[in-house]
Image (cartoon, rainbow, N blue to C red):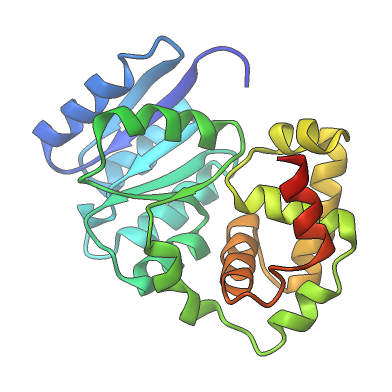
Length: 227
């Protein structure tokens, strides 16, 4: 992404919201173009300013996930990052289903927030440590092993790098291929896994590989040697 990253911050707590804005604007590559304290205000501002990234506290309404879905309907290009106190697997999965590419907790260190926003804006994803495992049981499918086994070597290499949080451009550089080729591989991978987006693919892959089912695969070893 060229130019400044346009961010909108949505949180009902004004002091916390202003603190987040201050942290983000300490970096010259980020510009906070809007803020909101309610769901309706968030939707109106999304329509008006079309931010690159929306940092959303889902506790702003009785069902903040519905607000998240509505934001994605208004601006599908906006990268949605959930900033919350909820650590439940159900909430993580619902956030992913709503289109979130990031899920971070409010006790995050200030110096972590800017790198996360930059990564997400570049096409990466980020989920607070430990939350992926809590979401696994909600996304398990009986055919996970078979689906992953059906991937070509290049598709698996691509998925492993995407699962580590790299953007499409970073994956392309690592593998020595075009960025559009990365997108092509991920499109086919998501179809084979039966998931709707790269975040769901990442959670599914991490779960399976964490179980050690493919930890000794030639593809995994090849990537490790490259690293």
